[in-house]
Length: 86
Image (cartoon, rainbow, N blue to C red; front, side):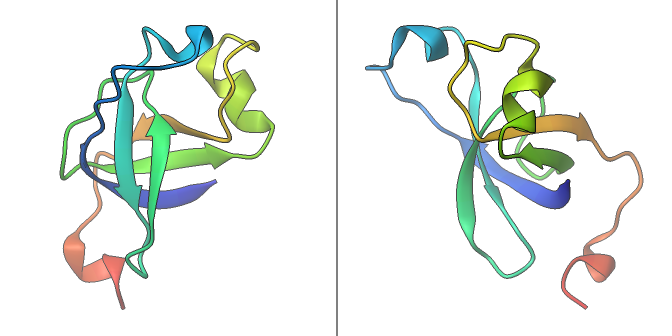
């Protein structure tokens, strides 16, 4: 698991069937690298989140048929920008 920040929504109108109804978010790590994550928890841009990667990401969605390798597992309640890039 990693801590990342949500930087925005990702809209993709053409998707494979298992991703049709899933919300997608663009997240960044502390070095600024961007990735796309499935969002089953409903986060917003600016939220710090816990991301789950690799094969565990599929389990975290609750639907093993979803083809993802990055899922947002939770929104962090108490995390400050000062801790982000120290």
